[in-house]
Length: 99
Image (cartoon, rainbow, N blue to C red; front, side, top):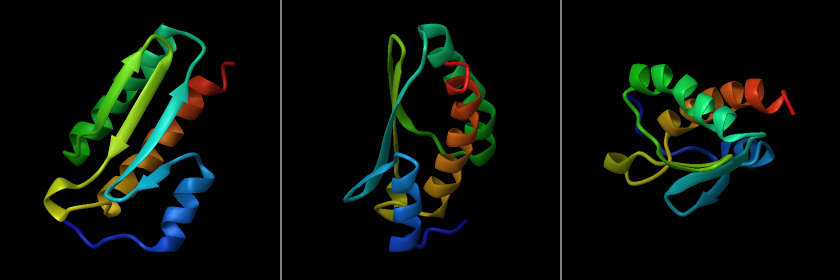
């Protein structure tokens, strides 16, 4: 398991896709067309989250999902967070493209 902190270049790449770096986590707010799409996004992420055994802090209010990723035992953002962020972006794109 890689707990090395990530580079500024990777943080820039994440920022370009809407992730915000704040000290020890990355956060993204997604707005879907409906509650059903927001909930379906979360459900579609679940198998990957379980596979990685890396669970986000997230919340859902109607059509909005806010996701925060950090690796607590490493004290910040690591490759695990980047991997999950990129997976979640791919899954979100499927639901956001319906707009």
